[in-house]
Image 1: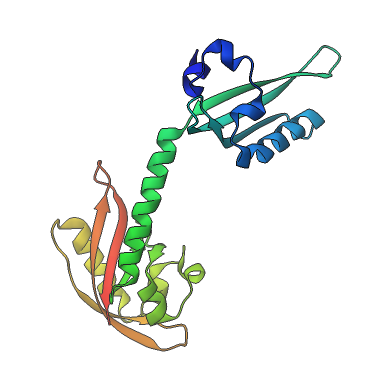
Image 2 (image 1 turned 90 degrees about the vertical axis):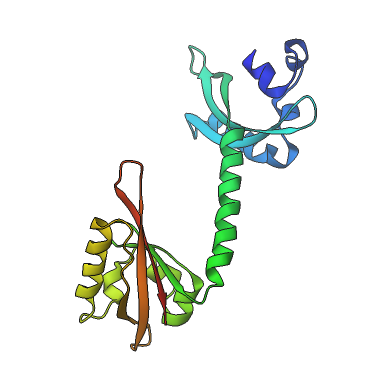
Length: 212
């Protein structure tokens, strides 16, 4: 009954259809390849996201999990498949991706450099202004320790500002500090930061903004 609801077919009609007929044509090859690997013994179980066609002609997302059942002689007998409805997750994922792309477009057109780190101060995100001003690539920035880019003489001031920020709600201390450029020179930035916390109050991210 659940499969009938998911695909929008009465049981009598659904029993007359093949897997090929309920799968969207553009993703059918990937699905049949998966079943082929199971039949050949290359895989014991398999899982993939795929798109099915409902009785009303609309498409629906499903997470397909498949196992190959063998008879007592070890020969392939039949496939047993389970389909999980993942349409809500796909919609939320698409909305998040759209929101992220929109904010990336906004942040990348700011004159200010934006750095986002985790509570360990390792970089999670930088906008295009950071690349333009400092010359480092996204691959070089991502996961690296923020203080590696801060001049040794300025690191204590940056650390003190973070300590104040973490212990005094509403504070946004400004710090003038030098950050290293890839060409070996230093760039002065006027920076301030904000902390993002989870519902329990734990620090999740630190967002730092700097202007040259």
